[in-house]
Amino acid sequence: MLSKTKSLLSTDKAGFAGKTIIHKADSRGYFDYGWLKTNHTFSFGNYYDPERVNFGMLRVLNDDIVEAGQGFGTHPHNDMEIVSIPLSGALAHKDSTGTEEVINPNEVQVMSAGTGILHSEYNHSKDEKTNFLQLWILPNIKGHQPRYDQKSFNSKERINKLQSIVTPEKEDDNLWLNQDAYLSLTDLEKNKSINYKINTKGNGVYLFLIDGKISIGKESLSKRDGIGIWDTDEFQITAEDNSRILLIEVPMK
Image (cartoon, rainbow, N blue to C red; front, side):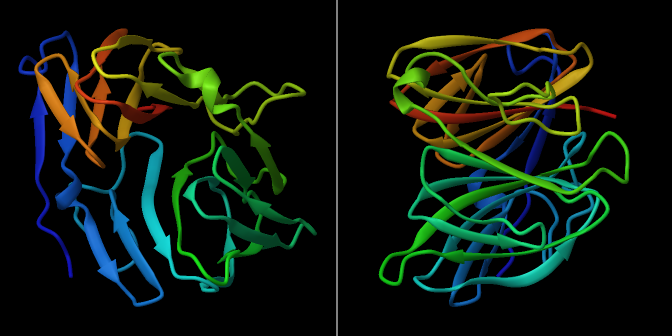
């Protein structure tokens, strides 16, 4: 089943200087394969919409629910920065760099496919479903060395403030990408607001509402809605209900 696509492009309705594009949750490409229920924000696999191919350097945003003991067998990737964020359950990962790990909620995985990597992903549980987000971001150049990393984060450190989870900076204690991209999470309590300032001029931000209800300017978003924002330096997010938000800042070209 393929959901009907609906987008909104605006320069003034948003209520702030900038441009926006809105993707409602039910406009994503949805497929039920039995072992996998998946929603694609952008064109992927059997879902194709020429108006929904990417947001700047963000190429894929998939919302996957995998049945117990099931998963994706060994398959190849190259020249892509891949980020996996478990929301519930646990994800077992194995790849051709020799890495074999389990990723849990409040952990984030980064894999640079670079010149080529083989990997598999399975629901680590034999009894419960797992739900995770997977992002594909185009790298700054082709041909990087393949690599893997993951890190755990304290959920208390994102209550009513931004928690940086991925940056371009190669530092000892952070997750980084081969791209001028910044990923953040926040758990915003009802009636609380937070400002997001663009890190690099010219970048845009794709905001994905994991749960809750928020407003940005004059726009209201509900669970699993997404909004792309660009041509602005900052914007404010207000929670109309307790909300969990993923922000993905990427170059627009």
